[in-house]
Image (cartoon, rainbow, N blue to C red; front, side, top):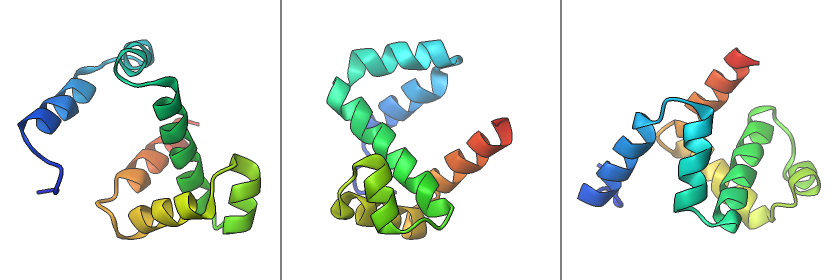
Length: 96
């Protein structure tokens, strides 16, 4: 169990899992997140994709505008987390 896992976060995960189309997901993100939150999450995914390709922190920072602190945090989650980034990246690559 994650530190952040509780009844409300479980409900949020179920809400995300219930969405069936990209349009539904966009609508929910727009309702539940600020523009900055959406942009930050998007940036983190881009950073993870670049790390997956073996790109250096410097190049990732130049390409994405992410700070080295953000890149380091994403790298830690990518390497030692529960595999969420790796799962998403693998599925995105399959659909390209």
